[in-house]
Length: 440
Image (tube, rainbow, N blue to C red; front, side):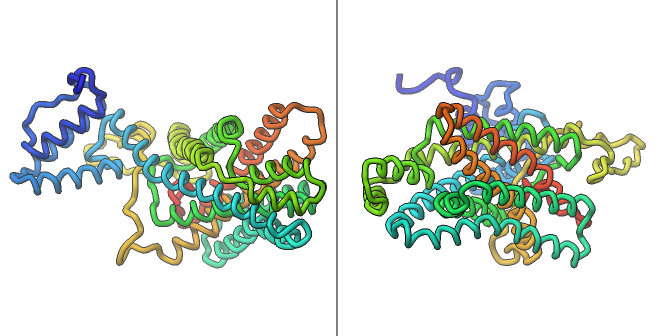
């Protein structure tokens, strides 16, 4: 059949057809969406918007629709009041902003790591070791350095709290612990051969992600509290284990790790390391399909975190939990108390992009992004990578199967990230109520 009957069309396509008909003919056209569905509710909202603001021409209705779409993307309270449309808007907002940014940053990460590793190998074993060591050490120290600078800035600005101080100290201890672990087992190999390219690969991801998120912030009504923090930390760890397995099983040929493993495999059949390195650099080619798969997997995991964090924070929210006050609202004149944010439901929306005259990020916003958000993200991720590389090197000498080694490494990565999750969030609890990390 060339076309589908209305009842066979997905609801999303029905909604798009309805919106198109309203754009061409006006608000009173019959709907093709099914009553009771979220898509039907959104169409009804748009009809009401056109009724409240009559538009006689195609151009005027188009402007009204653009304004309506913008309100949906912001998850505006006056536009989206029902549960299902609000949840759809949450997913759209997170997928549009976080999904796109994480996918792009991950793709760039994998490509940079692969290219850097190949260039190192073209230099040869002896010539490449000094730059490898410098790159590896730098990648491990950048996060702690930004963390220290951010702590000093908070104290000078008078915005530090006991929670933010404890969080920064905790993250510093995680970084120090990772350095000790890495230095305890073949430090030249871990810091140089492995971390020289994989560490820079990790920095590419964290720096690019936070640079882009500086220009495209989110907002939500989740807040921060202890119960939600513990829960979303554990869920994030579970997501990271699943992410590691998915990447290893479905997209193993990607990034610096792939180049290192393939070069080692080729080198087994050659006597001279330099010859093997040169051959590997010429023979091994990037696998763009696996790069894209890893980008998609990582985007799904991080989008899940952006959705589950405010949801769990909102669920566990109370009037005050010691971290940040919640739902402090004045009763309206009628004397009826305003329902708390948890009953209103989680709302995640896009803020106006910080692009254009009068909207560019301020110096304070940029400093907060890189000296708090990026400092925490880079410290935690590089620590997890460093520990996992050391564990992989140790496990390579055991009789464990490849799958068992992968599972041990994935759980170690998840454990480091779970331990670092509360400091990552807590570092944003400041006197001036800095936005939660998902917004940065």
